[in-house]
Length: 127
Image (cartoon, rainbow, N blue to C red):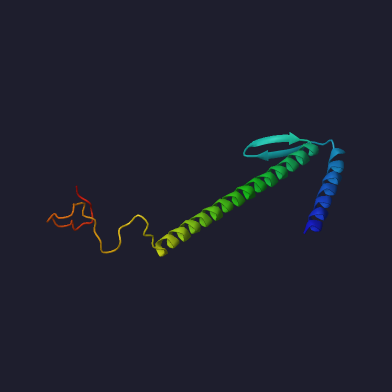
């Protein structure tokens, strides 16, 4: 792939230099008209304008590609973060923790021994 790129680059530069040499010999003006406007330009000016247009098109595609790659990387990172959060949540649900909690079946009452008041049914401690 690299070799093909180098060959195409050399052909492009060689063709551009050859075209530049051929066009620079011409002194005739070229008439261009579009949308009711007519302009007379030298062929060298057209070659330079064409080269500038190609460079701008190439730069635009490179910038768009970089933007697409960056956005894809952001989506990938977001997906990995969400998967990690979900994995952590599932491990928390699967592992019961009893530290700091009352044993099952025991409801703290907050009353002193010997009182006849019944324990609250909602599990809250009342003073």
